[in-house]
Length: 244
Image 1 (tube, rainbow, N blue to C red):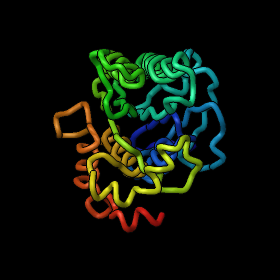
Image 2: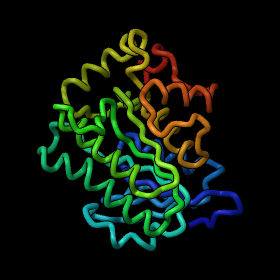
Image 3: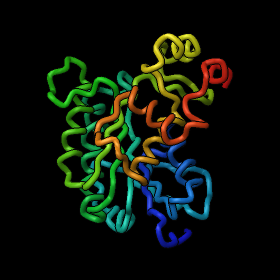
Image 4: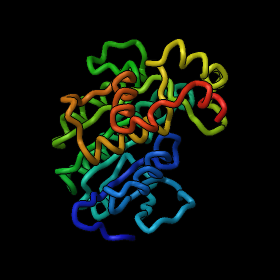
């Protein structure tokens, strides 16, 4: 793996085999500010790159074995998650809360100065009062991450994430939203975000920080961030996005 030169960041990503995590990985590898990327996941990526080091880790309920891999990291993006209805409620809480909190514990022990970007979700409820389990669990995870001791924690709460590239949708609602995305984007622009734009924002903020004075970014904020940092590539028009 490539050794970062002076000024370049050491970057770690969890969930690079997923939709958002995959784009985050691509962008980090292409980013000149990033000198090395450690991808931690349960299965191989199937790619090679001089910046990339893959670390296979099966059980995110215990990240104690990751100490060496997480040592000396400057920034992390955590994109591991599960769709509501795809797993049992018990497993949903384990993946949504226990996994990121345990990973954050291990990262904080090895790299206490790292910045941490977390893929949360729209409606995340830190008060724990929501009737929706997903909202409660994301809020619980957010609270724990903010208390983990990192100097910078960034919580991203996207609404509908447009996949960009064709994929097998997890349920009917997602199939419908993908089909009507061009119109949905025009009518409700602050309720959608492209997966690649979301990933780009998460990586950029983890690496560069932000002067927005915020730790929590709702969908509207993420869209504005993308346009601000990358005005030439921000949210594409509905006519273009709908054909991809």
